[in-house]
View (tube, rainbow, N blue to C red):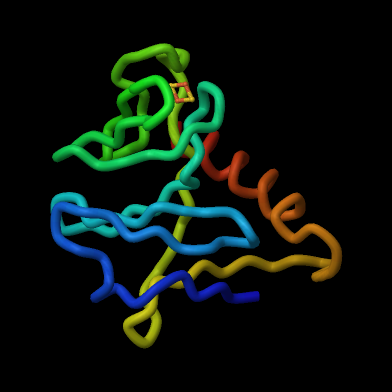
Length: 124
Ligand code: FES
């Protein structure tokens, strides 16, 4: 299954573009020439994020995260927490996510989330 998030050209330099991902919101950005996509949910208490330079700042309680890897830099979020990275690629100019789901019914996000967490753990 492929999910098209947004046109790559819609992601502004130095800014962000939000997109829908299995009925949740993700935040896409360009960092040092690379595309990064994170679930737009702060690991502290679920606030949404805004970008300031190379940081993503939680709009609820101001935890800060590194745009390059989602790692917490400070604030009330746990210092070892980080944003959930969504692996994507570009296809036909569209930011794309691809996953194999055995049973594409019900809450697809609930099926995809464990895969994402496992992939994120592998990166650490
Ligand atoms: S919800 Fe993000 S710092 Fe509290």
